[in-house]
Image 1 (cartoon, rainbow, N blue to C red):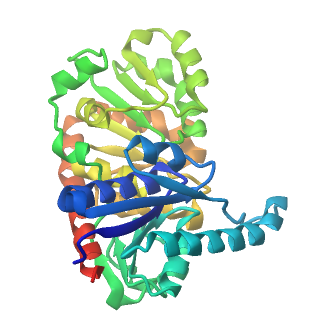
Image 2 (image 1 turned 120 degrees about the vertical axis):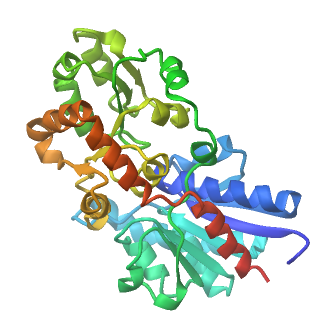
Length: 369
């Protein structure tokens, strides 16, 4: 291994791409310490440009955005952005001289990993979903290693390059296991009332938040308290609903939860989108969950993710267009049945990969020569 290892990491757009990338970087730093230089590459204007520096790593941005699947005037600029991003990626690689390049998904990972492969730099991509996106499908033809979160991915990638690792989970989720009493106290909630945790992903979930806001009084009448991560776009909507409800003291509302370890520890039931990072974390902590897949997700991968757990009797799923009709009954049914929650908890843990980050870093280090 070289005396100093240079590693490029690209992942962003949503927390589902950013947090795994940071988890991998943290594990590399923990193992190699001062012997590693890590540089992130993201998309200008996306949340990685804020979250990565907050985690202590340098990042440079590409002027790149996604290609809309429907007719959209923004698609006219896509070829120019792509060419510019490929050119800039080439320059970044020439200057930084990486020993390996890692892609966890997001707009910037495509051009960066493509150019790294062209330049014969060892490459690794992470595909956390049960159905890969277009970018990873294309990259899978040329990268050295493909770390996946689910079995059966040889349908999409060359079997010889696949390693089933699971999806990275933030270290604090795995290592910090506060007790329920302490966690409820952290959010200012009561010890003797079941707690519902609502998380819409790093960007929130407006449709889910709006539906839950409309049924808030109904949930409170069932003797439930809530920890509610709204995302920035739904925060005012939910705050107004709480101000107008029967007992706002039983609802803790924040736009972004900084201590997810506390949130999971406090929760008896979780409502979440079905992105890979959310599922990976919920499996590791072993919490019963109701998943509401994002309808517009590429290739409907969130529904496919959720169905894997539903078939394993580890979770329930409610489609977004059925929220008002089915969600209240599902929530109250789960909250009233401790036995059902215990069964789901046991089944959920069978899907957990607490050592995923370490396995991925093992594969990264194998590529460094």
